[in-house]
Every structure is written in C-alpha cells, then in structure tokens.
Image 1 (cartoon, rainbow, N blue to C red):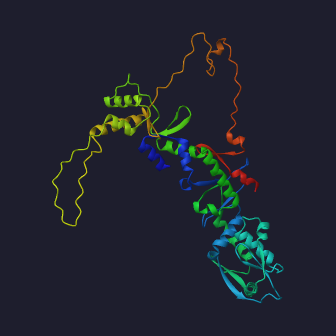
Image 2 (image 1 turned 45 degrees about the vertical axis):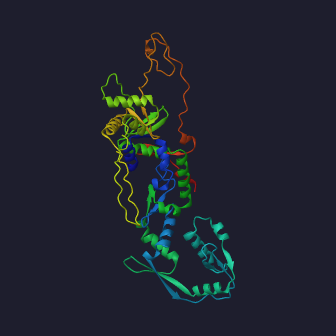
Image 3 (image 1 turned 90 degrees about the horizontal axis):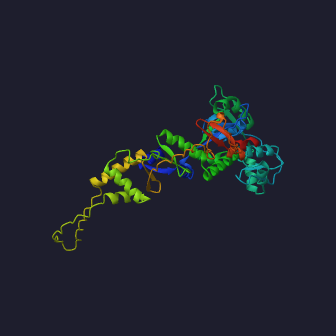
Length: 426
C-alpha cells in the first residue's frame, strides 16, 4: 500500500482505482489473506476457527489441531521407547498396505487393523473421505513385506510425557492424545474470530478453507471491489485524492481536477504557454510538451583532433562522442511549472501518459419564472399551494451481495463481503 501510494505521488499521474486493484490481485505476493468467522444474530460463530500457536496453522476443529500437533511436533512433548513383546500368533500370508503412503497396516482380520486404518486416515489423509481412502488400500502377498510386519509387531511402543513436572508412562496413542488434550491443548490451541493466512500454509489448509479462499480470490479478480475499497482507504490516509473522469471511472491522483480560470487568476507566462499547448494539442505527453516548449540544442560540434600515432598491432582509440546536454534551464522551468499545475489539479496526467486540462464544472441551469422544474430536480415551495410532482417509481437498491446470497461483514471503515458463510454447512 505504502509503495503504491509513493509511486502515485512521485509520478503525479492519475490511475484508475479498479485497474490498480486488478494489478494487486493478479499475484499472490501483492496481497494477504485474512479469514473471518461469520456469526449469527446471537453472536455465536457459524463455523469456528482454531489456530495452533506452534506454527500458526489454521484448523476447523480442535480435534484436527490436536492431531496436527501430535503428527508434526510429537517429539516435543513425548519420547518413544520400543519394548520387546510376543509376536502375533498364527499364519499370515498377506497384509494390507496403504496405497498412498506405502505404510503396512497388517492383515484385515487382525484385531488392531481397523483402529490403525482410521488413525492413519485421521492423521495424514483427513481431507479425503474415509471410503475413498479405504478404496486405495491394497492387499500385498509379498513374503518380505509380511515378515517385516511380523517383526514390527514383535515390539510395542511406550511413550513418556515430556515438559511435565512428573514423568508419565503411556502405553498407546489414544492415551497420548487424551493426555495432550488435558495438559497442553488449552495453551497451544485457541479459538479465534479472524486469522491471517501465511502463504506457505495455503496448501496445508483444510479443504473447505482452500475452497473459500479460491472462490474469494476468483471473485476479486473478476471485480475487485473489496481490494479497491481497501486501497482507497490506504490512499486517502496517504494524502491522495479521488475523482471521477467522465463521471464514470474513479481515478486516484495527487490532486482533484480544479479548473484554472485565466481571466480571474494571475499566472506566469510559462504556465500560460503550457495550457495553450495542451489545448492546441490534445492527448499530448509530458515529453512532447517539454520538447515543444523547450527543445534541446543540437549536439555541440567537436573539433577534429589530429590523428594519434598508433603502435603496430594495437587498436586505434575510439573517437570522442559529441556532447549533448540532457537538460537546460528552460526545460527545468517548464518542468517546474508543469509540476505545480499537476499538484494543484489544473492539469491531469493520465496513466497512459496523455495530459489534459481540468475542465470548468458545468453549472446547473435555473428554471425560468413560472416554468415547472425539470425532471429529477426537487420542487420547492409546495407549502404555498403548488402541486406536488408525481412520485417516480422507487429504484431497487438491494445490494448486489444480498441478491447473490453473500452476507455482509461490518469492518472498520468499509463494508466487505466474506465467503466464509459457505462453511456453515460442512
């Protein structure tokens, strides 16, 4: 925001606000994503958000956040120790294997198969429906894979709680998860009303949140109303001004158009020449204006120096280039006058580079005595016995967002619309 405002102020050009907003939303590194919770009339969130303070990841439920911590930061809170135990009894000729990660789950008729299958799905593939994930499991009859599973089952894991006053031994992952919820969850996982999304976390968000962000960004790229509103606030705080060109397109510039009446205001001859040239040459540019009013002198003639003897086998020295001045006092004077006109709003330089003069505002015609006011003008003095004009049909002022099913969100300074209500049905 600050760099854009600085560039507009230094260039002194008028840029269409919505074109600037479109440029901002074209690349992800130019904007930030902020998720907000929609609340009902009673103030309750329709879909809560949870943030893990360890890595600022965002989740839709506390259980998902707990599973994330136990997957990514398990060694921070618990130590794992393998203890020898009896191998499974019986003869096994095949085992089930995850078709995505390759992890061996064991025979489908083994007593811990279903629990391990659901735990693996919840920890690593919870974005995929369970039935779809279950269909990806394949049966492997390789003797080496079966033997490796039997060796793994010959040991059991025991977990020791860390970062607690007293060391506690836990025998299963279910006990670990319950201990984490009772001891650490309240300090590490919190419910929030809004949360900024880091760019590196966009691909790790839950599926519904990724869909919300994708829909919101696509909507902004088609019509960047929220981005333009945010930019207008930032530009206004930076001292920039807004105006409508041809009563249709909003522009942002260092000054609003302000007509300069030469009949009532005294200006220098240089300013008069600039205004006269722009009037006579519509769509002229800054370079064309300066070259016309203060052209550069021709290149100075460099006297030809006598040839310098060159040693045999070496290259001759290059001839000196003619000296051409890049600026003159006359050109600096034109630039100074043009700079003053641009900052006063008497002259507008558009984003395309063309320069135009601020037009004189048109005055509204007054109705003649005894003549009815024109359509759209307010009738005065109806208490004196005059007839009230017929009432025009009321225009439909329903906001575009309400027609399309989006709910308004009251933000400080400007109304915005959030796609987060789509999460209420998940």
